[in-house]
Image (cartoon, rainbow, N blue to C red):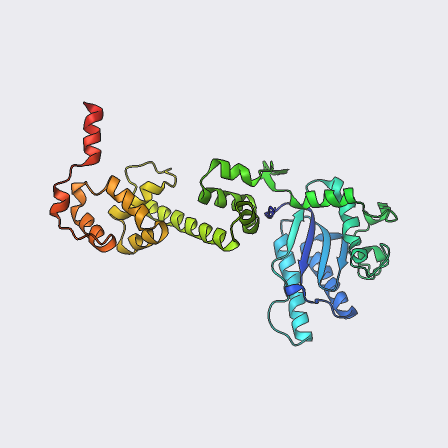
Length: 344
């Protein structure tokens, strides 16, 4: 499943938030009213309108339209103020919300009416009402009226018609789209399945690129038939490798290469052994394993007489080799010999 990334753009947003562990966030009418009052105060301060809402016992849906790039700020304030109210009233501590609110930018206004019906349909789906407009804490009940509420969409929708499977599928497709901003215009990114990444990159690279695209670690684990823990460990290790590479690059240890040099595994191992400090070499062995590091060392560094002292330390400390410096002095420089062959 692809995780949507947040789009910061003026326009319509579908907002969802749940109580932590799906716990109740509204116990009585005063709680529902307090949340709406907080939303009303925020609308005056941040300048937004609500076109649909449904407050369920353990979560809420909102369809709002912002006129400034302040969605995160306004929702943070609303959730924070309500949390303070709720915790004080019920003498509780700790977070009230499951996490940061979820938001979907409505990039196609053709979805607006369907979204309104989807939001207002929630009480029917939960079995607590039989028709839209019946549930007290949904906008279609017209139970609460104030300046933040814009009834324009509600008044132009035929709620007698129930949501069918086709519409629900369209909503699912809409909620799963990956968006991007190009020339200040929101566009739908071309969908790339997981096979796309694993056909083109090694496992580490493919996992990171898929996660950056928006795939969850659990969906990648399912695709590869691995555990979530295995994916998490691979991702963490690869990020550590990239961080070590960037650290050496920022120190100028790849001085003979272009400043735009991209991550290269063999180069990282070789230059860490040659120029990095002891702790970095220890980390290198942890990230790549002794066998992989030794293979690169033997191929690119062991015969280089400029690094006899370093080679001796590496051989003794990290590879457990019982050798003296003379062991390296008698070796032919493999790179030099290859260069001679090429130029002869």
